[in-house]
Image (cartoon, rainbow, N blue to C red; front, side, top):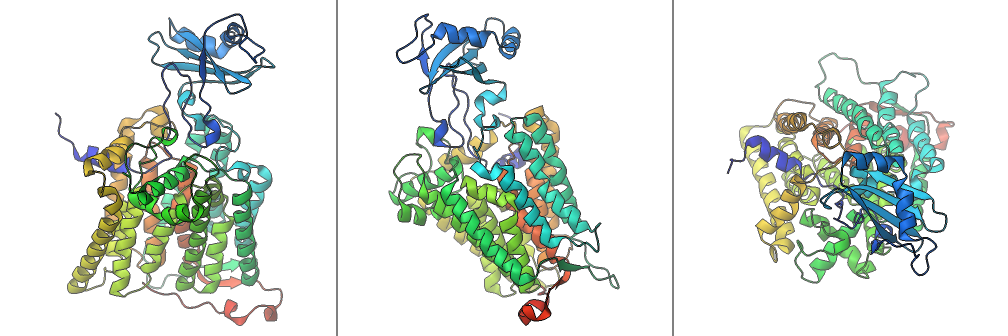
Length: 579
């Protein structure tokens, strides 16, 4: 057996960057397992070819097959596969499904959905869009009505408005914020099932933000000009009211109009298995068979919500997943305020909290009720702990690093950065003590988090359900999966790991801005190298990016309509806290 190379090991670790579990095409069934909600769980029922319509149907299976056979798209794909054939299925109460297979009957090459009453072709798919239902652009599959332009565009405007400086229209901050919003263009194509446009359009903003974060790591030169001020167009107290208004809007929208994708469903299943002392890995329900691909802490966090809201045992409305997602969102908002307050004062804290609640992609994650905001929460908590110089804070960084890594694995790459933060100028004894405390806390937190898993599952089983499963998956949602560039993908993966290690040892900006920029650059670099990238991953790095972009500016300056109308504390931000 060929020995595992270092590059292969790196690829295996990178593959742990967890993605929503997705289904594979089922042979001769013509249907993909659900990947977003229980609404996609209607399994097709095979029907023999006949000229007689089944009971309750207007059309016969022969008529439906003839409709599908006339489609140019299906004719083209059948020419590519000589000997291919079509099978007919009942799909729900009012639809038919025709699935085309290659000569062997093992590979599904085409799929057509036909309305029974009208005889119209409702859907037709080939290639990866057969297996990947999430690539078909189903309206509201992720986030429901948050994708509507009457919600998305106002959020984009609200996100930009407070930070626009009309006196400096060509400010680099304006370009930074537009880059963060430019993922919307890619999402628009994704929502229209144009994956060959959506995938390449996600890379320019990722590359731009990576370059910006690396640029912010430079130490200030002696005698250099001070950074420009953060000039808020809206008074900070008004911005604070905007935070509370948008939080209320987000929560109300989540309760009234959101869906729980398989990621949130997995959290509830895992919590239930922990509560009932069942194995955490293996033997999951068929409608979320690979929901056990995440770290154990992901499922443990859902336990309080599963206990509070219960679970019916089915993929229903899942109030526990809603409660968890709302809680993660509130925590992220609070942590950003606390980080901003530590860094520059309450004005920056409010600005950072506002940026989170106004940014449409954080609402996208909330409305999908995924666990991605939990990753942001744990990383932000570690960054906040880094603002304190005590040994206890160093231990907290270690524990939070472990918990973040045992949620979705990718944050494990941040452990070297968080371990070495603030040690560049420290003496060797202090460095050794700090690293030891970090390592002990990391190991202790990891051991505690692993207890529910190891009480029933072996390390081999956990490895198979997480590392091996993730390593062996393909995906059309990256340049590597869509175009097949394994050599380039491997280079990018190795470069991302090298960057994570390099940033932990080279001299860089020593404050929270530098740490946030370094962590953001690491996460973005990792995401550039993975085979499955999705918009729900943007909240992993967004809060770190916004801390770096706004925190780099000098004391916030605000425009007040009446100097006496705002409390004095808003106009006198605290001095920056070095860390």
